[in-house]
Structures are given as C-alpha cells and as structure tokens.
Image 1 (cartoon, rainbow, N blue to C red):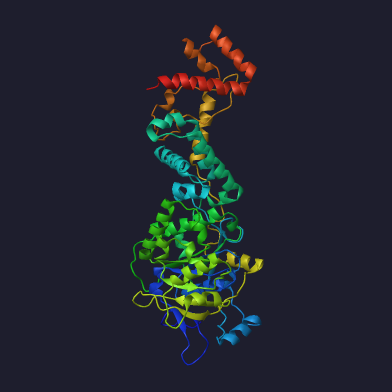
Image 2: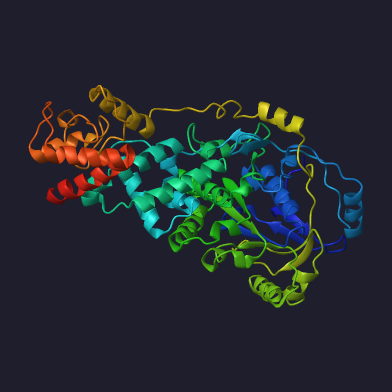
Length: 530
C-alpha cells in the first residue's frame, strides 16, 4: 500500500490535465474539526469512506456511525468495474489500488457488532434527561435522584437500578423534601414513563457493564494502520434521541478521559458524527452549550470531530464556527426556503474569484463537491470544485458471513459479550425491603413496600439519619391508628373510633381504604413533624 502524499490526505481532484485541482486535508489540522454536508444521495457516504481510509493509512484510528448500513465494506478490498469504472473514465480519475482496512464492528444491541454499554451514573442526569425528553422541572427531579443515590452510596449501573431508585425516592419524597427540595410524584412518573419508552426501543441494552473502554477505539494493527470503528446505527436510528445521546456521551468520554496533547502532527482519533442534526434538534440551551464546550476543547486532546448532515444550517453557529475543514456536496433548491438555505451554505465557504459558490452548490453532480480545507497556517483555502476520490475498499456492506468472521477475529472478541450484573441500587433496595419484610412478618401479611428514607440500606448515607435498628417494624394498614388513641402494639379491644374507621375501610375496599388512611396519617403526623 503506497504511503500517503506528504501534503496530507488527498480527498478530491479535478480531471487529469497539466495542473489538475487537488484538495488535501492536512493531518496536523484535522483536530480543527470539519463539516460534510449535502442532500441525500449526493455522495456523503463515499466521502466518509475515503476520509476514513486516509486516516487509517496515517495510523489514525477512526470512529463513525453506519447510519445506512453500508460502511462496513471498508474491511474488504474493493473492485473497480462496471458503472464505477465508467464514471472514473469520464471524470479522468485513476482507479485506486484495491485495499481493505482493519475494522472493528460495534452495535448497541449486540447484533451486528460487539455490544457497547455505559452505566447510568456515567451517562449522568443531563444527557439522560435529553434522552428521556424531560422538561426543566422533571430534569431537576432526575438530578435529585442521582444526588440522593450518591449520598446514600447506591450505585446506578443499569436501567433497573434507576427505576428502583426513582420508586424509592418517589415513595419517600416527604422525607427528602427538607434537604433536597420538592420531589413531585408527577415528575417521578414522567421519568418512569420515559424509561419504559427507552426500554421498549431496546435502549436498556445500552446501560450496564462491562462499560465501553474508550481505549479500545484507539488501536492500530501490526502494519501501523489505524482501526476503523464502525457503529451499526441503522436500527439505532429508530430511536434518534438514544442515537444522538450515545454519540455525545462517547465524545464527552473522549474529552474527559484523554490527557492534554496540544497540536499534534496527526490526531489521536477522528470522530465522524453522522446525522448531526439529531444532536441539536430541540436541544435545550444547556446541552448546546455543553456540546460547544466539548467540541472547542476536545481538539486539545488530539481528537478531530467531523459533523455530517444535509445542511450547514443544521449546526448552531457557535459550533459551526469551529469547523474549519469543509466538504459541501449538492443541495437542491426547489422552494424559496431551499434557495435561502443554499445561499446560507455558500456563505459558510470561503469565496473563490473564479467560482460562483452559490450557483455551483445546486449544479454539483453525484460524487462532486466544493472543498475548502485549512492551510498550514490554519486558514481556510479558497473553495475548489472537484470530484471526491473513490475508496480503495469495498463500496457497500459486508455479508453476514463476512461480518461474523470479522467479529470472531476482532481484537475485542469476547470482552463485551457477557453482561456483568453487580450488586447495585436495585439489589440494595430489594435487600433492605426483604429484611424489613422478614422482621415484620405477622399472621396477616401485607404487601411489601420500598423502604422509607429513614430505613435506608446498610452502609448508606441517610438524608434524615435514624438508626435502622430503631425503626419500628412494619405494621398492617390500620395498626398505625393505635398510636392516635394512645394504644401500643399489644392486642386490646378496639375503640369506637377504630371500629368506625375499620368499617369504612372495609366498605370502600382494602386498596382504596389503604390510600385514604395513608392520606389521613400523612396530614396528621406530617403537620406536627419538626
């Protein structure tokens, strides 16, 4: 395999001639990020594959999401023939030497690649609130749930941990109000419903252990080629918020994990964020600010980020201003709104005296692009019109057999396949509940409930600290009324008041009666608590 041109990665060029136009991406400017835009079917996927090959040749690992399911062919050597050979001949381009590249396949669902997981705690309340589509109030309650779990030493690893923690906090909201603030049942319910929706979409497989080690993305093979990490995202796109949150989490992990590196001769990793508009659609201001911060600072960690979307307007201006390397494929202007979008896209490219950028955007053919890369001083080069070079690897997806063989020979084969379920919040709360139920066993058993905030699991930090050993044993629905008339736990003849209340509860029904009496006790006992 021939070494790359000293000028950088050759992305596109004009027809053969005495001085053909050539567009290079400088490796030392790849961490200044980039943008690849264009309408569907104009050649963005080929551009992605060509760039990934160029970085791999330089020994730079790559991560990219395979939204359409046809990027996995980069692992196999390509063949130039038929229609592609004809197109190359018409454009005066040389056919590339066939080559495959080291590839690792990943899949959140564990079906088309190695499983990818993160813990609930590692994702954090901000990204999780985005995934669950929570409003500001509900997101605040979710932050309190995380805070209470931290204070009580309860680990949130998977979905059942968070569900159990939400139920625990909701059932004992009154005990947490003074220290943490109001926790409404409506907000807890909204969080639980959101978790159910994510589980229904298969997102529960994303949460748990073993968690992804980012270092596994940053590998090279024996020949010094960087690994191309491909996330199977065709199924993941059915849950766009899960997809966007997952990629943002990965980007944040890179930012938080990698040490400062400054400006390098080549990046440590290049991250392609396909369908980037999903990341910013309806995103709250705090999240956009977080993305802007990560994109701005992650370059100092030696990571290059390329956003891939249909129109530059899909990216907020604060983020767009940081994307120095640009590849613009064709846009269509069928409506006045489309024409405005084309003009705005042209305004984001550096002008060229011999090229009408706005007119060229609508005139580009498939595989043709307007290219403006950063020069050795970090300045955008004048925009050039050129043909994107075809990849040396296979265009199109791997077969099922090829994918299976590739996974079996992978450097991470067997590392992530088996789920590890450690004792965490769910088990701690369940254990405390079982202990409480066993201590309070009576001839007439009542349904167990989540332990109260004053009966937290062992070794947990309690917001309203009272020793567990001093907590009164759980009693039946009406036993608590004994204290209102001065009675103890001993058996005695029921008073007139008790008989009336028991009679009312029986007539209404056991479940409804339980709820009414709980409400009565809450108003009586809660009002006198100091």
